[in-house]
Length: 228
Image 1 (tube, rainbow, N blue to C red):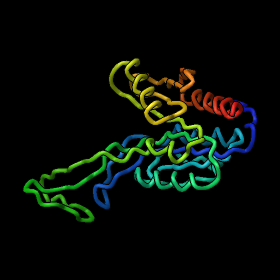
Image 2 (image 1 turned 180 degrees about the horizontal axis):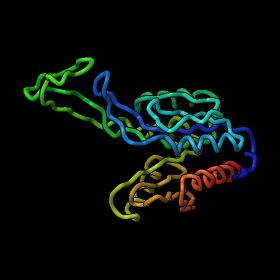
Image 3 (image 1 turned 90 degrees about the vertical axis):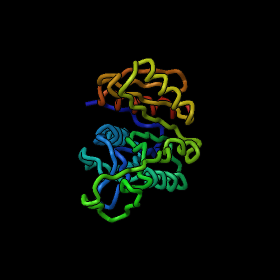
Image 4 (image 1 turned 60 degrees about the vertical axis):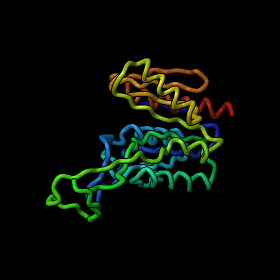
């Protein structure tokens, strides 16, 4: 069993995990295949290491909630999560944010029949026939994090399924610079089962599994906080 050193002081950290869901009607929704496993493993490891962990967990996460976690708050949509983060930013200081949640890139703007009739039923019936669904980009929660938490350590995630490893790492670096992140974890099909960690300090680490990534992130967090 991995033994973690004690954090410098009792510190509050936030971990987001699981898939967001954007409604189509009151029964159906858009989402993705994220289970919330990695976020849950990280939240549990940080709590074991002595941090005061707040886990913002999707209501649709299928990976079991760890029973030891004391502070778990559910969210559904991107805007729901953004609202919770903004609320947390107005309370006690947060040392670090780990934005592991897999959020929807699009939400439904409107649904119409082929002749242009807008549908807004609680449950759109199949008798409506062929439909047209107009999607629009969701608000980027990651773009709000530095404004909410100007002094916190912020770690983002970049999931890529196409292109080369070099291209995927370039996208992760771009995300880190664009949103003023302290670090980013890149993963997805282009990395097979590995996780590539890059930091604004140019530090890099390649982790072969979720467990090794979680262990690395806890130790890295200790190190960065100790330097502040």
